[in-house]
Length: 378
Image (cartoon, rainbow, N blue to C red):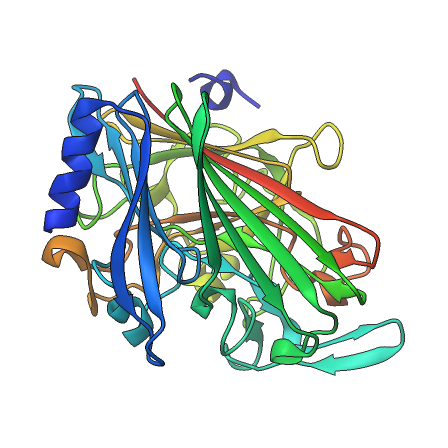
């Protein structure tokens, strides 16, 4: 990798900004609405001493806002989201949520494990996407808040029963969102155990715009991705199994490029994804090692986002299906390519791809995955 990569509303919104101005490390909660069956949902706000705050609801583990300063110290919210849970329930393109039991796609909603075929929902015709019809993004998680000398944390737990959405095994999941006292970084730690072998692939699906959510396209953001290969797909966005070199293609972000520079190039893969919606194979010195996967810079605000992960892959999605029908916080309209995602993950369709790193969790094993979204300015 080149040195460019390694270098460096509502009342609720006003409250968050006020907290950030005071720079007190704290965690608070407030009502965020109710699900369709009347279950009450909470919104938790984590604030550190350096001007960052993150709000997360226990409905789907959704990150509803991330407020960080720009190069002039002005705070701004850099993720898409809504002001109440009912809006997420009414229809959200996975804004900010935990996706699971298996993030991304599984071909034709089928996989075979230990000689038995399992059938899942084909909710992204003809494939299975992000855990199915009622994935982890639509569950109310049990929430516990924690504050110690060095950080504030929100700990979410969910137990997925055997057979839920067609997956085998009772899967006990724990996701910890941690905001360090003196670092503008959201740490997300995923852990899980099972009583039967099962595929697992958890990630966060935040949609970022470092100029501020709903502020316009992200096409002038500059991105570098620490990957020399990616996984090309067929026309339904299922990997072919090849680990293709990025060199000489619009997928080469080993040096920084504007997102919009080649997004509409005459390339079959860009036509399949309607832009970037692909998995990159992260350059890791050893599997499971925390590695810088992507580096994004927004020139007008000076904001920088680094994504670090222990996972082998990262899905870079450029909001190609946003169409202005989603109206978010403060009445902001989320139009085509107004936000991008960096989803740390196992490769799509890994249960059906024998040459991909295994995503199978077995009894007695522990699933663990760390993702860090680190913010700075330059």
